[in-house]
Image 1 (cartoon, rainbow, N blue to C red):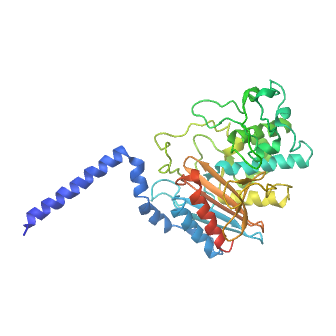
Image 2: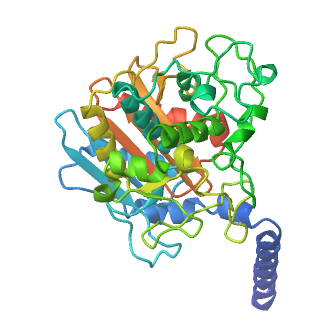
Image 3: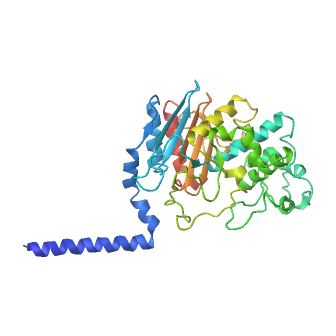
Length: 388
């Protein structure tokens, strides 16, 4: 039988081994360690979930699902029902520390591509006013500088404004480039050199560049700066919606990069935030976005919701794009207009049902394996199974 001193020595040796292994993995794979221990801070974050006094019970369930399925320690939900009543929930902290102030209804998140439906709404309102037409070639709207080069345009001829909105133009290029300026929106003469992929009917190729071009269409046709135009058009000031910058805002939640493959606190993204204004540049709260969407829906803008495509799979997410959202039919048969939004250290989704009820979720982390969309699909399917 081992003596007491030997047992103590074994325990001490084991604890020392665990300590040095922990230090080793922390130094060599810090994100791996943070991902492994995620359930610990998530358990504390779950205790902070708070909804307004009259919020339906299922909103708290969706907060939990966002915490565990979408992997966001700090998050918000805003929900506007068919009677126009707003409900909201929050969880987590403004800063990394568990002892910092809690998130609130007004905490700021980055919307990412939730920006795109707002750009689409500005385009469609301009169409209603006769300022432009959806079937007009965006090359003609941005005329000059060699844009008419026929050898580099798609044989399908998908050069309309609407093709950009639906990600059907096949335009090739990126605006999320590091440490340098993309050509859009600064040197639009470069559009004459852009190549286009040929897309089959009913197919799309998601394009951030396409929405940058749309932003410049808005700027040119409405004679002003894109940010100023849409801010005034939708009264961003009263809602507290602002455009993102590299430094962030004092009321912005911390960004959790543990599930991002590259970026982190020591390697921050260095995009040109002005260049991405019309595709992923807006920031604000879930409540602000839901109220903005309510106001846009109240204008009854033609072709803002839904899609007339009959050559796509509505039972898969990100397949059936309309002018502002993609349409998705959940396993229970419910149909939704959906838009997801991602930026490093941020994620979100807006879902609108057939009764024009609005659900917005925002989180402070990259969704694990966001590219394949499986977790977001699961999240929307859970939403569909509830009273929404």
